[in-house]
Image 1 (cartoon, rainbow, N blue to C red):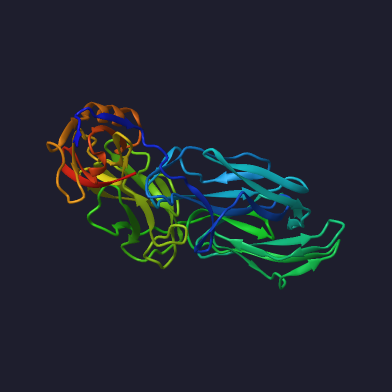
Image 2: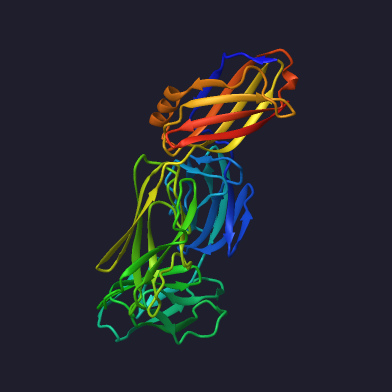
Length: 449
């Protein structure tokens, strides 16, 4: 047997080697979503928000190119920037808000690449909410004005049933910004037509600046706001869960403070990459993109990200410099991480034997984007080299064109076809050597029928 030196090489932009799958996030459990998802019944003007997760369950990279929802009453919240490439096991999160505008059924398709999941829900009559006698529109704002730190203010609210049938009240709660409910009756309760209940919303800010909260009555939401004086925030300190970051990794960032915070508030964490851009570089969970907010709690020395103590990000597939910036109050702190050049990483490889050809496909990334020299050594079942030794090829021009035009960072997908004469069945495997400016890597690929 001999493998002729005629080699057909094809280098193309990374394909969707795996398909993303949709899950609904239920606490700490991901539940797969089928062809439809039901939001249930919500009062007209009320809202319900559901957190979804798109995950790449396959062994190779997958690309999310389209994510959209079109239909009255349904809105995408914090969708990832597309296109985005997800390495094996990675995921992105987004939410969908359902806010019915009329009685009866609502529906909308959730478009994911070329697939669709049907979102459904229904609207029903709800209670009327008043503040000190004035009717509030769902989503409207009540301004509590200015307040000095340590003081408190309150407003009187009432809930009336102005419909022709009974209405069950299951929730009355104020959240965020130092707002709370006092004097509400025990729940659940049923309001007959014409009945009403009353309670107070108290504002006692623990931080300064413009503070916002939400009053929720069942699924109806009303915005609350006020301005309070702002004590100084502590200095943020950026920490990573590893000191040796490399390309193709996922890591976690935490933000600590040099002392417990005297106030509650929010800060901002940003990622910047200096080097060849890679769409897969950025935050993964519990948020996506390259800029996120973190929460600061009075008396705590650790920031939170959506209730978590840290946030995940992926380094991408190119060498360069990661700049992490934390902004809190008047403080701006940075951490700089260098991603060193690496030998080529191969995360998928396959060899197929046909009647007179051997076809190899390899996927992975080259963070130097300098791949070029290739060598292929065919071996029999005993591990002995076949033919006259390694077959060499220079694919520098093909790789250079790919990295300049594909917009996938250092990711690549390589296809090599070898015409074979003689006893092709003797070929058991092939050693593939790929070389870049950082060195060489050898991958043994088994040949299958």
